[in-house]
Length: 219
Image 1: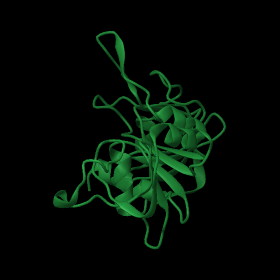
Image 2: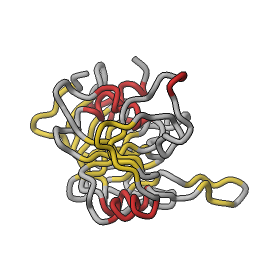
Image 3: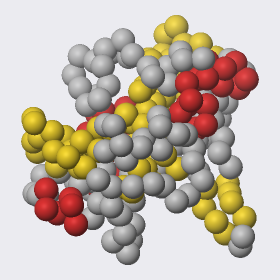
């Protein structure tokens, strides 16, 4: 499987029965395809839906029913639709149990940067609802490639890009490893199949310790 599928499959294992879950743009939305059998939960989309269902067939899609990334979705029985302000308010006040967010950088303090790139001296495209999600959600899971295209670590001692949220990330899932965020140090819980602790150390700037129950990812 490719790296994005590996991350999405592993992220889905963090979800549990009865939770209210937000999935961020891009790769995190794929986690809904790999829910463990028997897990029933409610997906939220920040543009104003509780009760997001599976992606419809192209012939059955409705341009007025999309997620926040403008991808067509369906509505499950009992779904609730609301305006954006109400949805953002629910995100800020702690209604959601889990959010899975893509990231550009994360660090050992639990900081996440996921919105800003500098082009021609300007930061863009804008922070959006991720700021509200990192503030109000009980558990924030960050998903990202472990290193950039040049091999530089994206799991840092301290993020260098503008922060989306501070001290908010609970779990980090990459194509190489799963970390929990501890007290100013990461805790290595799992390694991807075929990846050793030494491999992970070689591409991780952040400090980390190894969990007592460290093991290989089960996908």
